[in-house]
Amino acid sequence: MFNPTPAAARPVRQAAQASGAAELALRVAAKKDAAGKMQYGMGFDDPKEEHMKLDLEGVAVVIGGESQELLFDTVLDFVEINPGESNFIFVPTSHPSCGSGLVTTGGCGSKGTPH
Image 1 (cartoon, rainbow, N blue to C red):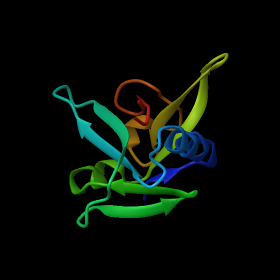
Image 2: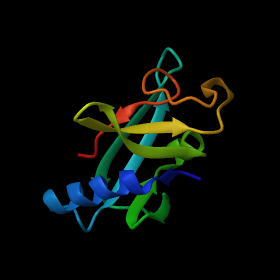
Image 3: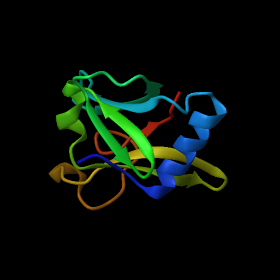
Image 4: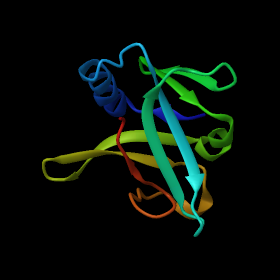
């Protein structure tokens, strides 16, 4: 299952409030690019009936059918990338090529920002 950490949920809730999107869900998407690397995206959106709906850490999350398999066992976290610079990262926990380390570029993790 897709799972945001409490550290990720807080800035998502803050962004929703600040942008007037508090009534919308966080849509999370994933796809593989032409080179086979994972690309991730997030934005506030109205849920569609056919999409997976989750309530995680107080954040309403929707995931479209095409992204559900790609996001399975993925953690969304919010971490300090550099001193004073924090960002969202996606960490696929069950993909063997990712190992146990945190990767923020390439196929095992990617930065994303809710819009």
